[in-house]
Amino acid sequence: MTATTTIEVPHLGGIKAGYSLSGEYDPKKPTCVLINSMCTTVSLYKNQFASKPLTDALNLLAIEPLGHGATSSPVEHFTYWDTATMALQVMDKLGIEKAFALGTSQGGWMVARMALLAPERILGLILLGTSMDYESSDSRSKGAWDPKALLAPFYESWCSTTPTPDFLIDDVWCSMVGSLGFGAGATAEVIGFWTQTLKAVYKGDEGRKKVKVALACLLERDGLLLRIRDITCPVYWLQGTEDAPFGTKIPAEQIKLFTSSKEATLSFVEGGGHYLNATNPKEVEDALLSMVNKYN
Image (cartoon, rainbow, N blue to C red):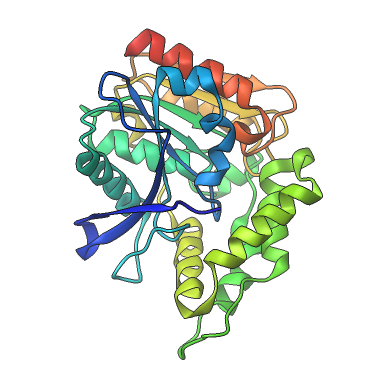
């Protein structure tokens, strides 16, 4: 479901960040920060937390972004840069000086921002099912989806000038989160789990505001194409061949823009969906362990 542990960090006047650690933190092992996709929670990484090869080799630290899960903020509005800053401050509070960082979909945008804000602290990036651009006309011409056309009506329906104590996120949104992300793996059980999770998170006036601003971040986000040349750590980008929102042409072009990275590679995962860590956990595990073994 959502993270069961929160920690307060100073950004935005005192964020309570939801997070999960794979057991007791072991300072002798490297750490990987994991940041989940739109409207999911730390539960997206259940396969990674259940993997003994991963948890033997690494501390896994899954952090729920602003607008997601158990994370809450004293202010209503935030951006992806704020989540990146928050995640770095969670590392501070837990005594983690450096870490690898893995992001799924929107998580990819956030971990890239972490590497830009604190290049000395991020040892490597694993990007899954993502794009470093916003959904510009250029990106859409190369296979990216158009979220404004699809999602703007949801945003408008979530804007209210009066409190909405009875708000409950609707089934259409819940099923779309599952079907877009899990693709062929979006079984009735999967859809049911995420529907239950989303309805627990996004309810009442606070829940409506959380999902509203989370969606505003997605619809209005800034692209990173002019900035990622400054990322110096290694980058392993994995993209499923069945990635519905971003396809395969965009990552093939954008991986070339990491010109300062120690290593920047792109791997296509045959049949992989958008939430690649969930649809193809073995390939993701192999990539993460390969990076850690090479660069820790």
